[in-house]
Image (cartoon, rainbow, N blue to C red; front, top):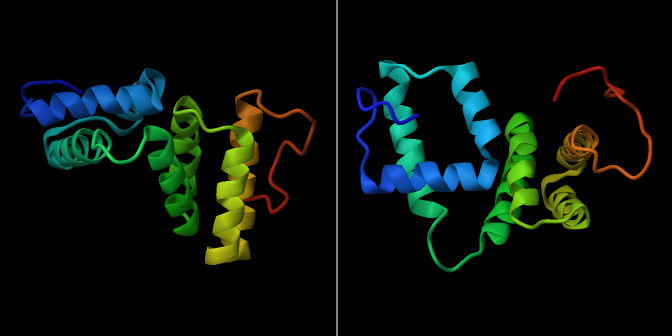
Length: 149
């Protein structure tokens, strides 16, 4: 993501790249770049996101990365951004959240954002845990509703 033709490598941009990779992991960042591509058109959005979210918000004092991950999971689940919820679960675990803590955050979402958000968020979490060998028991391999969240 550090192509000088596409990005202004400001101090915040470089810090943002470092923070993003630390939180969500090199593999996820590299897969996202490979899948979504980088071009002149999207570079302005990527510049903004990397500088302001990863280089501006995430490194701020006041909250730990674990606390920021808790907030992210709750907001993503409550707003129905399930692919992003799945992706940020890896960051949450990397930032020290346990499976039980993730479950508690999602239960809180269920109480305040409604059962449909909670049910779908738990489906996403179960898929994430299964994909990352974090389930203690066997369960269904596919969504009962047949849909991809």
